[in-house]
Every structure is written in structure tokens, then in C-alpha cells.
Image (cartoon, rainbow, N blue to C red):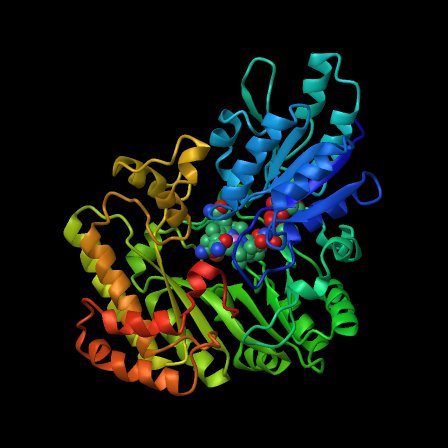
Length: 512
Ligand code: B12
Ligand code: SF4
């Protein structure tokens, strides 16, 4: 057996596929050192057959998959199982947010041999190096593994070992992503799709982590409040490459918190000022509220079209419960919605409804309160896009909120099979949180309001609903929106079905 590597990106959606940056960056870490191939479950019709054919050659030793919670789990689990059953000598390595956060379930499945817990840029090549060396002496072997940061493995005594976290790396010092290698397997054009921003959109990831520690967010256990970004110049070099080679006219920034460093954002905005490129990224209201009007205008001029903002709730007490940190408040959300209106950048505000509280009445009152708050935001800035999530717990152990959800009787699945059951898949899509304090009538209220809201204000990011369709939908939904009668909005649902309304919160981001 030779030592080639398969890097697999499980299917994450049905269309508009993005560059699989996770496996591409992992590929970059071993580029020129080990032979590796990329399999993208999003673009392969029969991805397992492809993997099977590679493995049958006997040249491959490592099956490595990135895994996000939600739909990616389906292929990740079933393919890993089949690889393990049919090719027992293959070493299985998983990385990404799901195994990093849910490492106990993954290791207990005995399907996964190693987990890369967070960034893999140094961990992955170091792991392969140790695995390629002589493993005769178990003690020496385990000692070498325990010296690799960001690694999870099982030792010979059967204990799960988590090695220490590596400090975040200088992002400019990382190797360039092997775009030309990806192009050999899947032409890059396939990933540069049309979005509401432009006809050729690049998905780009320019920083690791986030400096905040919101207790509902899945990236906190992985990064513990750390953040490091590529320089503006470094980002621009990559953008220029895609502009010159593929004539891109839009960028989706996939960073958890793109606007963390104002200096970097403004520098980058100046660099792309005349390139006719629109961009979108995720940020925090309190961070962006510190930007002056001139600075926001510069971003707008440079192409910043829409910013995804975690508003979460307008209630300051609940913001505290969420450990949102920073200085965000209900008043600031409203003020910022207005500033964005005046500047001309669309705020895409996400709200998290259904937080736990002491009594059932308190849970429901808070939901109604948030619905009202959302309506106030729409009054201030009708262009504001609203995304509603149901609160889905993440395992940020040690936080007060985590203790509260455990006390309320919530627990995570204990097997990988359970994670791919239909109800847990919806949990990850934040549509069915399975949280005991959220009663069915509350979920109905939230969902019905969401239907009426989306009817009254169809999202600008949806191509399918425009012109007369938008007018018809608004007309049909407006009386409900105004009177607050959200129950049984079947007529709106029927129109959404006919015109295939897209939900950014499920399909990911904002593109078509
Ligand atoms: C792009 C993206 C998507 C794309 C799919 C991408 C794909 N692979 O096909 C889409 C839009 C479909 C998507 C969907 C969802 N996503 Co998503 N997504 C992202 C996003 C923005 C970027 C991922 C990325 O490319 N990162 C860049 C790479 C370089 O970083 P990385 O993944 O961390 O990789 C490094 C390490 O993790 C590690 N590593 C990763 N994989 C592997 C594999 C191996 C073998 C090894 C060794 C190492 C390794 O090494 C890499 C290099 O250092 C992340 C947020 C983020 N900034 O990472 C969210 C994120 C991963 N998504 C998340 C979620 C929850 C979802 C959804 C399930 C729900 C939702 N509403 O968003 C949906 C599912 C919907 C669906 N239909 O699939 C969460 C996960 C949080 C959690 N609880 O674990 C994140 C963190 C966003 C967030 N802050 O909430 N997503
Ligand atoms: S600011 Fe956003 S990305 Fe950062 S921890 Fe909070 S929710 Fe997560």
C-alpha cells in the first residue's frame, strides 16, 4: 500500500456549491509532500463510487473528511462506515466543526481514528508524518502523537486524548490554496456562481476564529475567543488572481467575523475600490457601529453590498444570557439599522428565538417581544433582511447557559446514527431544536410569523421572487403583517411553493 491521501468534502447542499475551502486548505498543508486527491460530494454524482475506485487501486492509505453539522453528516458517516468495513487498513481522519465539538460521539463510534480539533495546517502534516514513521513501540508512538497540538486520538488504554490547542498561526505565512490542483478534479468555474451580488462570485475565507465567546455559538469551543486574519494585501493578491483569471465580480467572505479588524477592512476596501467587485461578509453590530459614517461609506463605495449581523435579540437581558459580550444593546441594533439605511448597505440581521427561561410564560413572552422588535427594525429600515433561527444549543461546556439547558432536560445524541436521524438534521438547520422548553405552539407562532414576514418583505437575495411576484406576495401578506394575525398562512405558503422561495437560513447565506 502506498501512502496517498483522499480529502473528501461531503455533500452540503443541492446547488450553488462553494469552493471546498476546508479540504483545500488541508490540501495546501501537505501539497508537495504527500500525493492527495480531492473528492467533492457536492459535484460528484456518485461520490462513494469515486472513493471506492481510488481505494481499490491500493495506493491510498488515508481517508480524510471535513465534517460540518447538518447535511454533511449523512455522507460523512455512511461513507466512513463503508470505507471502514470494506478497507479495514485505511486510516480515517476527520476534521472541521462537527468532530471538534462532538469528539466524544465520533471517537466512541470507533469509525474515526483521529480528529483534527481546529486548524489543521500544522496538525495534519505532523500527524501524517508520525503515522508514516515506525509505530512498533507503542509508548514512543503515543508520545509523538501527544506532542501534536489540536489532535484527538484514543490511546492504547482506550482513553480519549485531546492534545493542547495550538496558538493561531500567522495567516499570511500559510501556503497558498492549491486552486490549480482543485481545478484538475473540478473546474473552478463550477464554483464561481451567480448570486444576488454578481454573476461570478468567489467564496473566500480570510481569517480564523472570532474574538468573542457567545454562549450559543459553535465556534467558541474551537477557538476560545481567538482570531487571526490574513493581511489586506494578502487577500487582495488572491482576489486579483480570480479577477484576472475568472473575471469575478463578487465575493462572499466566509469568515466567522470578517469585520473584526477595521484597519484590515478599510485597507482592503481601498485596494478593491476600482475593481467593480461587490462583497458580503459577517460581522457584529457593536464592532461595525464603531466605524464612522465615512468609513462605512468607503466600504459601500468599494462594493460592500450586504452585511450579515448577529442581532440575536433586542432584549438586553437575553443578550447577557447569550454572553454576547461587547457592547451590543437593543437600542444599538435600531440605531445601526438606521445608519445602514442612510449609508446604503443592507443589514442582514439574524435573530435567535426560543431561549430557555424560568417559566413557559416567560419563554413565550420573550418570543412575542422579539417578533415585535423585528417589526420595529423593519419599520426603521424596510430593506433590512431578517433571518430567524430557533435557538439550538451548542456544547460550550462551562457556560451558564449550557448548565441551564442541561437542567432543562436537553441532551445531545449519543451515537452518530442518532445525529443523522431526520429530527437532529433539522436541529442543525436550527429549525427544530428539540429543546424541551420550546412548546409546539411557540414554534408555530415563530414559523407563521416568519412566513408572513417573508411574504410581506420577500428577500432581496432571491432571484425567483421579483417584479410582479413580489407585489402579489406583499399584497397577500400585508393584512396579516399589519394585524398580527399569523395563524395558518396557507395562501402565502402556496405562493412560496409555486415560486420556490429560498430560505437563506437553511440553504446557507444569501445566494440564489
Ligand atoms: C462555507 C460554509 C458552509 C457551506 C458549505 C461548505 C462546504 N464545505 O461545502 C454551506 C453554505 C452549504 C454551509 C451550510 C451550513 N453550515 Co456552514 N459554514 C461554512 C463556513 C462559512 C466556512 C467553512 C469554510 O470553508 N471554512 C474555511 C476553512 C479553511 O476553515 P475550516 O473549515 O475551519 O478548516 C480548517 C479546520 O477546521 C481543519 N479542518 C476542517 N476540515 C478538515 C478535514 C480534515 C481531514 C482535516 C485534517 C482538517 C480539517 O483544517 C482546516 C484548515 O486549517 C463556516 C464558518 C467558518 N468560517 O468556517 C460555516 C459553519 C461551519 N457552518 C455551520 C453550520 C451550522 C451550517 C449549517 C449546518 C447550518 C446553518 N444554518 O448555517 C448549514 C447546513 C446547510 C446545508 N444545506 O448544508 C457552523 C458550524 C457550527 C457548529 N455548531 O459546529 C459554522 C462554523 C458557521 C457558524 N459560525 O455557525 N456552510
Ligand atoms: S460574534 Fe458571532 S462568530 Fe463570534 S462567537 Fe459570537 S456568534 Fe460566534
